[in-house]
Image (cartoon, rainbow, N blue to C red; front, side, top):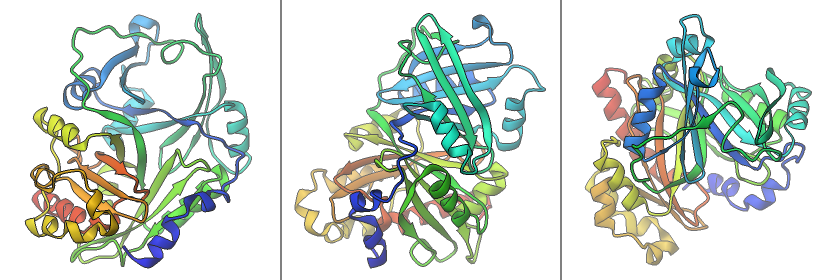
Length: 386
């Protein structure tokens, strides 16, 4: 890992001291996808990823314009929402972008204050503070736009005892496959257009009080054919991390350009979900039909012992088993991590997932970037989009 990356990657507590605390965030509340068919998408996420039926809102609950299915696995909540009529803005979003992330909801103590603090600093309003109530209490939600048409929703639920949100009912299902060991959202990555990364870095700093604690440029993230640049933004307590990518000049089309072409604008590129046992989780996901990027070559695994430095002797996992599943390994000054990336989970080459297990490491697998991007480029070549 390059020395300048190390300098910004470590001593995070010191860097976070600079983060402003006008927007305390307690964690990720939920992620809402706008999709073409929420019922079928829910079946996919249950079958393939091991999510469980949780809540539902739609015609049967008095909602006339959409249907929403809430799925849960440990601390992860995803909402799959589809339009019920052709003139819906939800349908227009899906028509333009395909299935994708619309709302990244953030759990806060005071949604009104979060909205006030961010809008007065320049955030564009998506939804003014709104009180939603039922017999279980009340939830306050308010939203602002971030890059593209993506939204950050502030969710205040301290006065609510229900399962999810007012207007939703418990979703009973006889079909609930076993979980696959996914625990929580580790980070979410956004792709923005040419020369827009620094604009959005400044937006997160000014509007949300985040700090940029890790940066990569095209000298560090490149292959023979393509390159990109990335900066990682984090809130003050480090619970919310949003890496932001932009394309960089290369000989051929980068994965970021491909995403922007097919998503037709900026948006969430991938969601990284944490597990405590990546070998078991990935084996389970593969057995359920989840497709991952191709396995790195033998030479990659031959060099693993030397790449982990002082943590060589702490590696608990068998390298042969990691290789068989295509799981990559990297280390920083805090420990090591294990990670693997799915192929896009829909026909447009846009949204995908990362499975990550941290064994002390705070980074994002910089040592794996070359192998990862070469795998992605092999897929791009098959699609004719490289």
